[in-house]
Length: 444
Image (cartoon, rainbow, N blue to C red; front, side, top):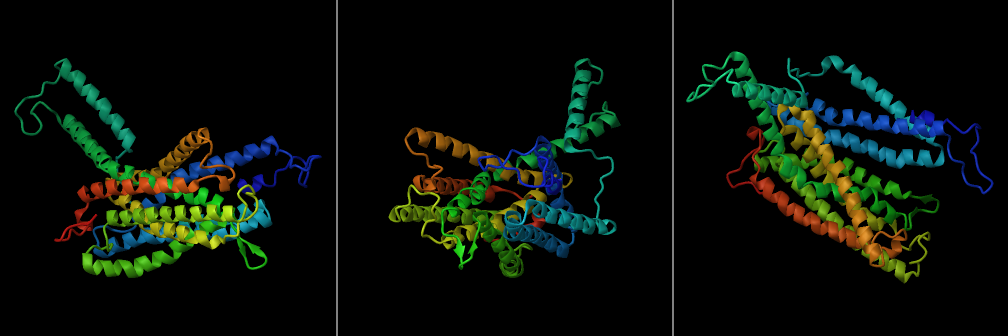
């Protein structure tokens, strides 16, 4: 639909322009078609993202030691594939869309998705399915438990079904149906507790998501002010610098999975080398380091703008190479290998078996909520600093102070990391067999 929307025009096959040389507004049908396409993408991702990892990980038997190790590697290689696709998009499709056309730019991923769907369907008869007969979803079970609780409460108030006291288990006056209802409620309560105990880890990862969102916003805006020439004829688009994150991930995941994990496994005895929470914490530290470097690079960029006399000329590239920004992108890529993959495995492994898709949805919600926090934080800081005479996020970045914002995020990330370490140290894993508790003790 996105590819087709580019073919719709306001009535002619040529680009429409006004007398002033400005492009005409697109037709209503084109705008409608475009936004419907985007909403369909959002709905599709809502179904695809939480389920694809859970279904993939379900192909490994966690009771089999070899398959347990393979399942941990699955999360690494799944993310490897994701980031390889992102790298191709940023390096190749951005060029196609900017220099050839949006029709082909959307048409290529359309054809790739069609091929991916065909390959996925070819494996239908070989996949492992875990079917729980008669089980309903979490919210359906919660509704049933509430209705059952209200019914039994009313019955007790009217004396229809007195409960004998002193019985260690179910009383003699409780029939089999009520036993089943009570057992059902107890199971629901346990599932709810298992979800709620993940909340401290979820909450202490939100600032990681806030920092992560800067890589596609202010990092790109910074890059747009730099000298992005590579050679005589090639100029790198600002957004293409994000490919360094994906490239770092693509390079580092095989190194992590094939070198670092086996070495760590020898010392820890853990099938995954280090625990899931240790892995997440390592990535959070690298993210903090990335924000510190970003702040230092931005401070240098502002100094270059002053020295070159280009403070009030935001459209003129500064005499500062784009390579200055590469380290902060690379560190974010390394942080993702640890934290992103660690969060995926953690929220898959530590939720009740029946709610694994919900667990991965919780992982995804960290980045959704983190983006909202980032937007809110930027809006508040912009209002306060504008009122005081100079916004940190001025449209002329040479007049702004994004470096202050990066220092703020670095400080908040440090506080968040301390809180995370506290909750990680006290956390008890659901599947203790998957986590090796050393005699010396856990560090995180």
